[in-house]
Amino acid sequence: MKKLTQTAVAALIATLGTSAVTSANAEDIKVGLLLPYSGVYAALGNEIEAGFRLGLETFGGETTDTFEIVTEDTEVKPPVALGKAKKLVLQDEVDVLVGIVSSGVLGAVRDFVDGAKVPLIVANAGNDEATGASCSAYITRLSFSNGQVNRPMGTHLYEQGVRKVFTMAPDYAAGRQMIGAFAESFTAAGGEIVGQDWTPFQKTQDFGPYMANAKASGADAVYVFYAGGEAISFVKQYDSFGLKADLPLYGAGFLTSPLYVNAQGPAAIGVIAALHYVPTIENDANKVFVEAFSAANGRSPSEFAVHGYDAARALVLASAGGANDGEALAAALSKTSFDGPRGATSIDPATNNIVQPIYVYETVANENGEGLTQKILATLPATPDAANGCTLGG
Ligand code: PHB
Image 1 (cartoon, rainbow, N blue to C red):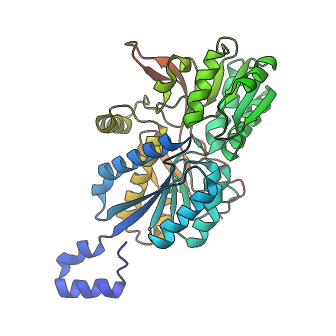
Image 2: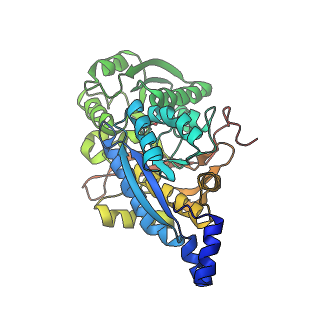
Image 3: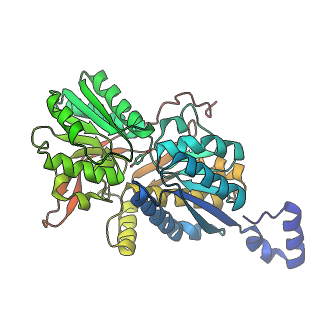
């Protein structure tokens, strides 16, 4: 951002006349994209960046400001990511950070971002604490929270007649929180968790032993959170283990994300999961988004693409509203509200977390028999997360 002081602007206007006002007010906003470009979430990082760049292209004309992007690879490693966040802020002097895929990484950078007073737009990581007890005026989430996506599925599965569930997830913050939220609502509805396995994160290649535990548990269904490379392996192994017919597979919808469902192939058919975005949502904003993304990338966008796209839109809106320093940008971001590809999308100023509908969907074969698509089974109303210890709302 060109840090023009009030006096410098006044001097420019006096010298050049009022026609210079617009350009004197136009800022160059430097954006630090902090994403995984290696590790099990590398594809997610690239997809978020593609969505973000498309968002700037689509909405950028709404502000006179321009945007410059600097990227850094978190490698899905919390200490590495913290070092990269510091580099982006202290060395590159970015005005805003956008990104973060892993809940573990978000937990690691939270205090630095809050202390440095640099706005962070979270474009994936669902860590509940970042918009709960560890919330910050500088952290605004345009993606989802782990609780928000999984809580409705506990009730939904019970209503579908499922009574006994075995759960599996990678052993880190996101896995624990997603399964925790599901288990809480499922048991509150009357269901029983008959067993749980936590697989070593980024290290598990063979899910067989855990699947054997699920099979022996007496469960009527399995509920999991896996994403990226782990989701591809898990869904394929679940099918080849022959479990799908006896033990229906449910989960947080990242499991069968459109980003990699084609790599899973027929193994993904019949998996039922919940997410805040699938490309088959029918609304005008999604039609525009799907068309533009498909034209640029030759395939439908995923939830990760919409996180980037909406993050760009929120940033443009904040900048168009005149926000030109960290504090003003952060304050403006917490007032974000628009009708986007996911439906009505807004930020709850009490937590800075997003409020959005949740879609239960099944992965099915395309009508033409080629490829897979997402059939929406239920649309669950948008409900803001509880403040969970966040005091932003007073
Ligand atoms: C997370 O760590 O918060 C996370 C990672 C990948 C996902 C969803 C959540 O797809």
